[in-house]
Length: 142
Image 1 (cartoon, one colour):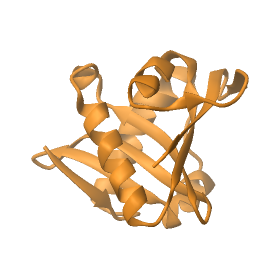
Image 2 (cartoon, one colour):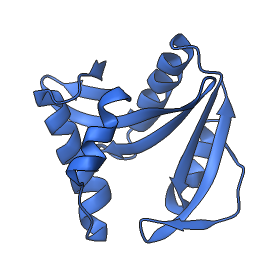
Image 3 (tube, one colour):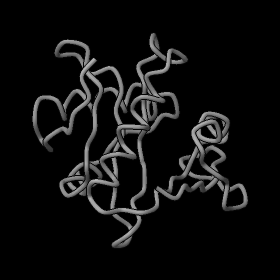
């Protein structure tokens, strides 16, 4: 598997949007707006590829000079639970460090909290609702 940074509006980016839609949005009856996607042009877009097919992805969004927020973490259904998410998280943390960030935060779905805790993240908020489902804010010093 190849881990790499994806260029916004590239063919790989279109695969990324589709994977995120299938895994994260469609089950909730949600979609992406043009404004949602345009807002990602300055984000760090990361993907895990098998040959030319995107298998997992995530987005890093700057929140302040030392903090980046992980968003839209998605692993294709056939590969969930096989360690791809852990590999992508390590890659995302390394890329964040390379860009000078010292802290990584996220809004984690309640169902994914255990995964993030195993990767060193701590809950730092009360439960809240986002995109119609329960979430927690989590963070890790890099």
